[in-house]
Length: 154
Image (cartoon, rainbow, N blue to C red; front, top):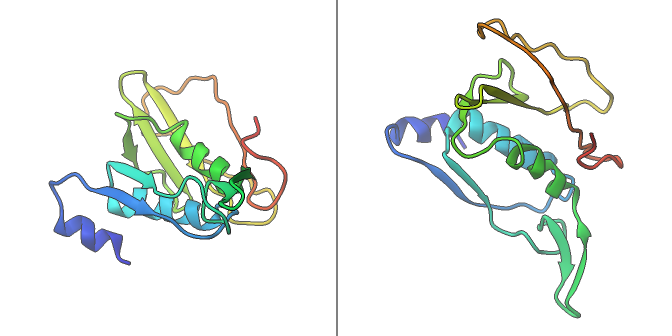
C-alpha cells in the first residue's frame, strides 16, 4: 500500500513495521519491502516475525516433523545486509535512488549504503556524496546474490 500516506497520517509518532513475512526464500520481496519502508514509511523499527519456518517463509528453513533445521534461506543474508550495517541510532537519509538506502551515523561520522541490484548482471553505480563536506575512506562492501551462490560475501 501507500506507505507515504500512512507516514503522513502518523507524522510525529514513531512507527514500527512489527509483523512482516512472505514466502520468497530468495529475499527479493524482502529487499523490495525494506527499501519501500525505509524510503516512504520512515519506520523506526522493522521486525521479521518468522525467523524459523518452511516453504520459504523463514529466514532459516525448518520442518516441524521431525524437528529439523534445514539451513539458511537467501533472505537471511539479504536481511543481514541491512541489519548488520544500519544500526540503532543511525538516521536514514536520501540515498538518491530507489534502490539505495543510506544511513548516517553522526556520532562515528559513518555513512552506510545498502544498494540493491535488481538486474541479473553486475551494474556499475555512482553515488553522489557531494552534500558531505569531507569524504574519506576506507570503504568496504559486502554482497549477497538473490539467485547465486554469494551469501554475505566480502
